Amino acid sequence: MDNNTPVRLALIGLGMATRPHLEALRDPSCLAELAGIYNRTRDKAEASAAQERCRVFDSLEQIAGDPGVDAVLVTTPPDQRLEIVEMMAQAGKHILMEKPVERTLSAAENLVEICERHQVQLGIVLQHRFRAGAMRLKALVQAGDLGDIALVRVEVPWWRDQAYYDEPGRGTYARDGGGVLISQAIHVLDLMLSLTGPAETVQAFSATTALHRLEAEDFASAGVRFASEAVGSIVATTATYPGGSESIVLDGTLATATLRGGTLEVVWRDGRTEQVGEPAATGGGADPMAFPCDWHKALIADFATAIREQRAPLVTGREALKVHALIDAMTRSATTATAQEVAPVAIR
Image 1 (cartoon, rainbow, N blue to C red):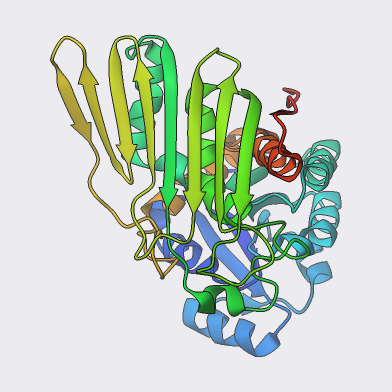
Image 2 (cartoon, rainbow, N blue to C red):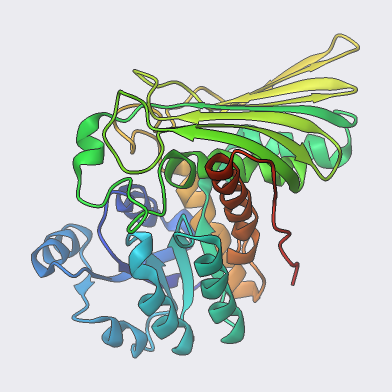
């Protein structure tokens, strides 16, 4: 593919998560353009296509057979992924997909293996990795500037009102695969693992508070032991009104780094301090989509560049299996009231 030619993406699904993608794709800097839209509700697809000035696809088969489509952007609920991934991978279309990969770890592994078998790229939308503060913190960790990480503290004090959970299927195991862990905290937990390395064991607790009516959990907490021998804690909820910024705190032997929302603060033990990033909404309140599309632009640009350069994107499906394995272990631990091992993810 010519480096000056935008990657052409077909959008499959028009759920809540599509807004920042559509905003990002209007900007040439994301190195991709919208080839067309498919949605099971035709009227909704036509309305969106008219606004974006693109075509409407009549079927998944039409997308799979279109040589002008390089890749697909999948924003459907996770229970609708298998048919799409199988068809597009067989057709040689690269796939950029909203989190989570699937509802369970085993189902997610299956989708990843399908894409690997057909040698197509599978990128997962875990955009928190692309914030300026997160990228700076990653660089500091990789350089060893914080020293050895001894303690990890994660908090996700978000809010969703009951209307959010009143949507059919929302917060159910059949459609979403769970509650706050797999639908909201997955972003922060993925970012945490990208900084800390793999978790080994967890001891977790989860519950549905009196503030919500839903099948799955709106509160979860856990103690974690990492492969690096660091220990840590996780608290995640959608029951904290009006919702606050998520945070990751890494306590190292040389410094403590606090990433809160989009802002990083580092305090070194020799007295130096550093701040990176700016405060920004992250979707932690009643409006889940109240955040800028900058991180999506960066993620789509990375995915497009990966296709051009025939390399893996930053967040592959296999990379995303790590956070799925952690959530799976937390769910098992909360159900059994016992510590559980986190399944290792093979590197390929």
